[in-house]
Amino acid sequence: MKTMMQKARQAGLAGLVGIGLATLPVVSQAEWVEWVGDASATAKYRYNLNFSDFDETAQEDWVVEGRASYGRFYQAAENTRLGIMGHATALVHERFDKLNGLISGVDLVGIHKFGLGSGAPVLRAQATAENLDIRDEMRDGRRLAGTLSLSKRFTDRLDGSISYTHSQRYGHRGNAVAGLGGADTDVFNHRQELLGLSGSFLLTERSLLSFGYTRLEGEFATQCPGAGIVGILLLNNEIKGAAVDTVFDETCTYKVEGDVNTYEVGYSYFLDETTSIDLGYQFRDGKAGTLDYTSYDLSAGISILF
Image 1 (cartoon, rainbow, N blue to C red):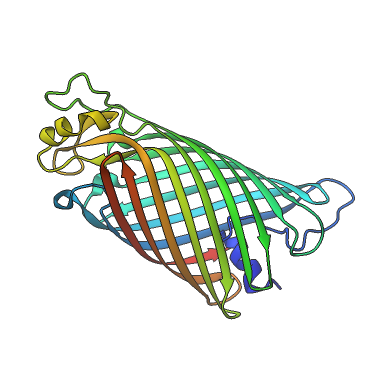
Image 2: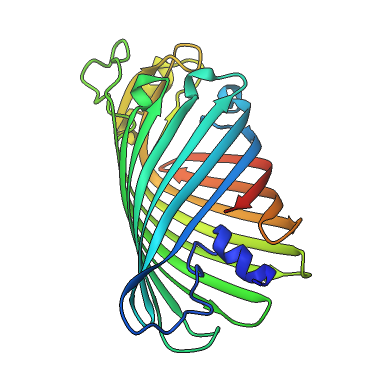
């Protein structure tokens, strides 16, 4: 029977790096060894979900997310596994229903454990391709990403990981903002680099504390101030594109290049070996030129392994 720490890793709190690797079996030949899957339902309160620099245009909403993933792992060598996973996330917003949609994709995963024992480091490489089917057409598109992560179990209760991700999002062009016909309207085409640190600590046999930090450098979208065109003209030397945004009261959204720091903490209580109740808090602090951004999420949900 898995310990709660092993279950937490498999659920993804440590980035799937622990799937079957803490007790990786020795095999005489390559073979398919394991089907894995999980599902979750989460309710979130999101403040400044439009990531506005201006208080008067910061929007808030309740969001319900349903997520599921399923796939199979192949024992390629004694300490190496390869896997393919499919995943899907459904989004339902209370106020801004044009943000509702379905994100689906495929992950190709390679996992290698350096040595024997539960404390040996684990390297994980992942390639992801996603389709973004959002009700607002400008936010439709696809995303490609590659991730490398290294994780280690330090004690029976503590583990941690470091990761690097390169991500490219391809969105649809929007409508030009009046007076700015020459501005690029591909505000949801984003090239991003992300560096992440995360860890988890087993408080008791049924409760887990998780924590993380992510630094994003690259492009992201933000909403214009209420004055719309006036705000864009004032900030014209700091933006990379602008388009009319019908989601937030016919205002506009522009693309900037900067950095975003994300801090998060979570708590999970395990009802049994396959089910947990999860609480989370995430705070984002961004900067692009002279613009400053803050937003946060509060979440509660349930996760199930199968």
